[in-house]
Image (cartoon, rainbow, N blue to C red; front, side, top):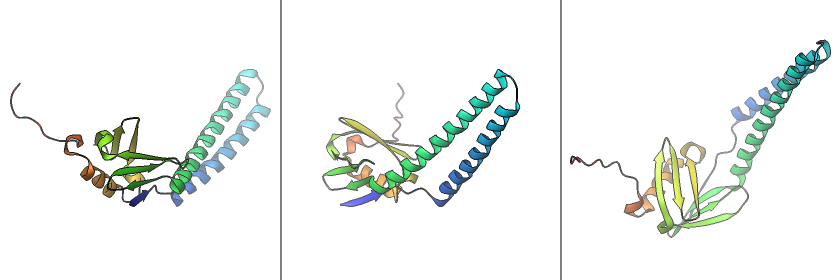
Length: 156
């Protein structure tokens, strides 16, 4: 069985997070300074709101980076002759037989697979050899489930 894994966070993504972290620290320091120096409830409330917004963006970016790292460690796609083996970031394995896939479509570089009881969207650039994975999946699907670009030329 051939397996395909997600890419881990790149060095550029980690560098971008470090820059965001430093910018957030500076923004929080500015918010605290404004809260101390400015008199009045409205400006202090605005500074506090800005501080909470910066913290929210920082926590969101940290969560996304951590989720991408966890996904790269555990999640994978396995192509077997009889089924597609999906392992999610939590380590749960789902076996989807080729016959149970009801819809397969490629839109904007993302493969959409729908089967009885679930669906998944796979980005070709998020996975090692993502285009090969997409091509292999499309080859193994029954002809009736493959997307087509056929346009009938008969008038309606």
